[in-house]
Image 1 (cartoon, rainbow, N blue to C red):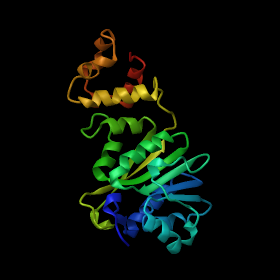
Image 2: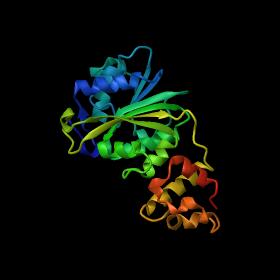
Image 3: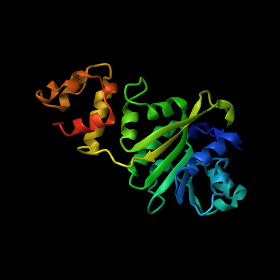
Image 4: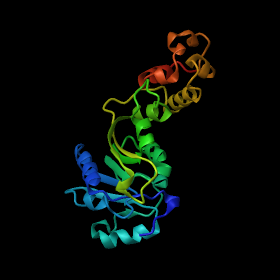
Length: 249
């Protein structure tokens, strides 16, 4: 099987890791499942075996699109041959997303999940460990940042387990990690998603500065006197950012 560096391909081969991913998937009920980047089908073969599940995969690589139905007949007619970032939701109603995500677009995949948040129940994905840790990071930690807040505003995030390089072909040069995102039971109430995103990005753009200096263009002088503006961005919870969004100019 030809690997394409341009697509960030590292195929998972460790059956123990695959079993743990499927076990994590089963913990949240679902009936419609989208796999992003099935590649050679190592995970796919477990997914198509799940009972009573409507399965679709999205794959950009021509060779893998041709190969998968030959190796796994259950995938015939179930593969969307496109870039995941350019498709519309493939199901009506609620669905779950899973994948050994290409590392070069993994954060963009998550933001696509946010775009579809009204339909996406759960996302289980393999990421570069550093990215996975950032997504799951709690407020106050060194790895807490823009992606942590923007994802956690809509999804509860759990870091599940590490995956070493030797679990893949070819082995990546970094550790990997699997995380699970579950749609938040109570959505965060913000002034608008755009305002919230602008606030979070502006605050973390100068994360070492006191918030008052980092976001002064977004608030009135009076509002900036509030004690919360003496903190730094990493000290604010997602709820803090949500509340502040209503005070923006």
